[in-house]
Length: 150
Image (cartoon, rainbow, N blue to C red; front, side, top):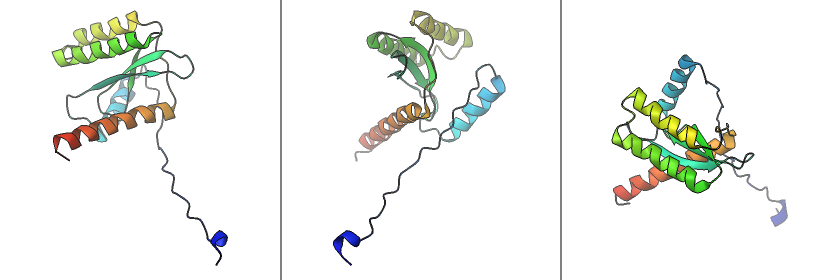
């Protein structure tokens, strides 16, 4: 067999199996969605991660929070990336202070971030969400390796 006649092995492409679900305004569906997300959580109990991501269409920087690492919830949208980062830090600090132990306190923090934003956040594509959750997973695994001395 000649060199150019050899069959090339095709690299297996890993597909992302994600589904966007709209559960806004449906408390039962929200409970089911978060229960499902908890089954594949990469974050420890009572651990959250926050961040920002630029929306590809609007160009706004959206603040997100994740309680499992396998999902994200959009909180606010800002024109200025620094203001968005500040809102994400505020959200994380409020969680660490225990402000989310009370529904009233949690709503107060969330409402502040939403009101200070320039617009309401918009949904993003599965690809965008997969990129964010992939980044979370890499961050968690990197920290685990460092803490175990690997």
